[in-house]
Length: 100
Image (cartoon, rainbow, N blue to C red; front, side):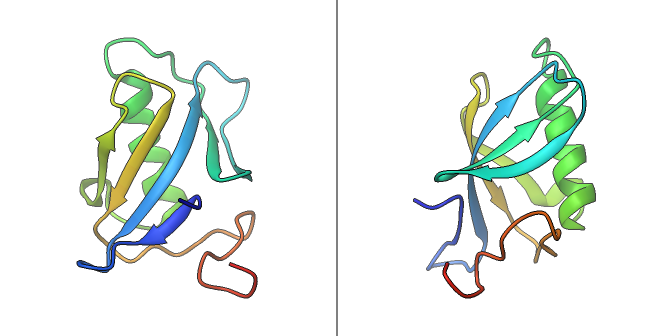
């Protein structure tokens, strides 16, 4: 799986990502086949997952309710389903663009 692909049944987006909590600053980047997400929040009592939803919602311009953790709720490697149409930020390669 590449870092972002469409679900062929629903048309929703599936993201493969690795989360780094307690980072100095929040950031998104693509590293290999995963989206790397750096969060300031600690991985305690769901704080990192809450911060992850908030950051992705802001950067992808979708509602927080459209971001669901499908796998990896408690680990750094996660699979996210986005049920709304995202607007990909400039720092990320367009998964539907050339070379994807």
